[in-house]
Every structure is written in C-alpha cells, then in structure tokens.
Image 1: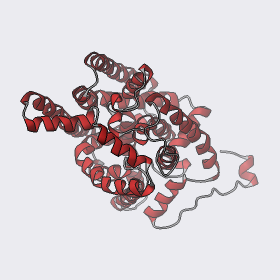
Image 2: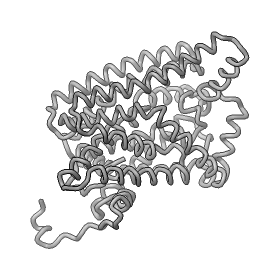
Image 3: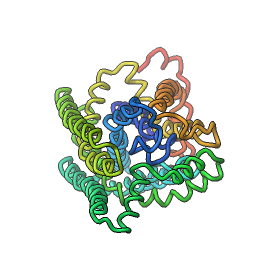
Image 4: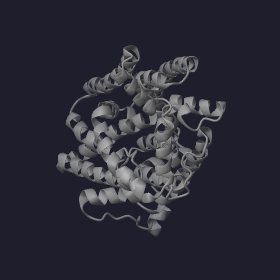
Length: 419
C-alpha cells in the first residue's frame, strides 16, 4: 500500500498522488460498504430513487471506478522498486527485505478481510507484488511492454465473459436460461430473495458477517488469477514511471501536461460515448457486462498515468494543500484500514446498521467527510510520530523489531536552525 520510510527519505510527490488515490478510492468502495454487491455495477440493482442517483453512478464510473485502484497499483510498483533498490544499496538482501514485507502485508490483509471487510486489496497486492519483484531489473520500455501484455490478459478474460453472455442469449436452451439468471444476479437486478439475504446478512450481527468474510477469503485469492494480471501490468507501469523519472521530478511540466491532457481526453471521450450508449440501451446485465465490465479497462489504463501526471503537476506547486495530501499518502495503509472500520461502523449491523438504507447519491456525504478527516488528522499525527500506526506495525513486523514511533523532540539548536 505504501512505503513506511521516514519522511526525509521519501519522494513527496509519490505521497501526494497516493493521498489523492486513498481518498478517491472510497468513492468506489463506499458502494461495497453500503449497498448490495450488484449495485456497484448496476444502479438499478439497489439505491436508485431518481435521476441524481443515476448521474452519481455515471460520475463515479467515469471519474473513479478502476482509476483509483489502478493508481494504487501504479504507485505500489514504484514503491516496491524504491524499497528493493535502497535495500540493495545498503548492502541488505533485497529479496529478503521484499518478501518479508509482502508476507506481513498479506497477514495484515487477511486480518482486514476476515475481521472487517471482504473487499480487502492488501492480500492481492502482496501476492501480485511478489511476482512484480522478478521484473525489477528491466528498463522502462520493457516494463511498459510487459505491463501492456499482462493487462491485456485480464481484458481478454473480461471480454470472454461478455461474449459468453451473448452466446447464452443466442442459445435459448434451458441451461442458457439458467446462466442468464446467474448473470442477472451478478450484473443486472438480482432476484428479491438474493437481495433480501444479502441485506439481512449485513444488517445482522458480527458473527454472521465474520463467517461470510471467512468464506470470501477464497474468492479474494481466486481473483488474483482473474484480475491479477491487470494489477501486475499497472505495477510494472509504475516501476517504469519511477525508472523513467516521471515520479521523481525528472519530467518537465510540459511533458506531464501533454500526458495528462491526452490521456484524460482519450479516456473521457471513450467514457462519454459509453455513457451515451448505456443510457440509450438501458442498463441491464448485458449492457453492464459489455460496457463497464468489458470495454472500460483499456480506457482506464489510458487514464491512470494521465491522472498521475495531472496530480504530479499540481503537487509540483507545493503549498499547504499538497502537504496535507502528502501526509494522507504517507499514511495510506492506516487511512485505508481506518476508513474500512469507519464505514463498517456506519453501515454494518454491528454498528449503526445503515446497510442498503441510503440512496446512492447520499452515500457521498460520508465519503467527503472521511476525506476531510484524513486531510485533517494525518499531518498532525506525522508532526509527532515517524509513521502512521499501521505503517509502524508493518515496519516492525517486517524487521521483527519494534521501531521507534515517536519523533525525538527538537533540541533548542535545531529549533533555531530549521533545515
């Protein structure tokens, strides 16, 4: 998720991009916390009470869905490379350093997925990051080429699922009809009994959610084979971005601006056309499978480095806001995990039990509130402590030694002569 190094040894612009991503990803994850699973892809599955909810769906799809996860993967690859390069420069075994970090990240993710929320991404990153390590010696061009090939594997899988749906529609057999009903439960409007069961689960007690989360761990691990190639592709692109100097300030503002404008323009035009097509066709299981599921991955792949370039441009101006976002990014793991706790507290039955009670558009109130909270608390915390609480835990576990957490107080001489 992030690289828990002291602030003096960090690339601040990476933290700014990561801070934007950790806040932005909640615009997508909130749907999993607050609504039945199918509603994330199909607005008519639940939480649809008027036009504002439909436009909230499209706004999230165009601006955030897949892009924030992609940015995290992009930055994870860059951070991975930074850690192993610096370990090697310090005379440590880079493989040992890397795999200890990935092993403990997997353990933290497993605890997160089991105890709180089955939508965890940390286990996925730990496993895919273990594979990405093998590409560390390649140059930017090869990393980009390998990344494109890896991402294309996932896009092919997604396209094949959409094609299978169309084939079932054409077949007209009883088996095909059952398959179409299964697609409706996953991508269209689920049967009332399916929705009722899911709502009862998440409005119920902690024991039932805990059992559900434990059973879902296997699905999370299976998804490594399903979307892991795309994640690996984005990690390799992040490694290429670091090697090329994009993330370290070597690119000119003009070059970053060209990347940002071109990528956002191409992706935005594609999403606009897709939105118009979905509205014209109606949003059913087939439309969702062909549109947001199968056709958007190449569009978001274009937009991810464009988003990174745009944020880097803004971060280059510095200022108080950039420092706030950098602090959020430096504590991305802690902010990610604490966001899960806060959203589960609001929406799950062991907390305030608001699951499936809010229209879609109103969910962005808690999202904005959580974003503001992250911006407010991260910088003061890092003023007193070296790491976020979970970054400190991860670092201590990976080194098998408690790390100093509180910053040493400034001496009078240091206070009078700031660096």
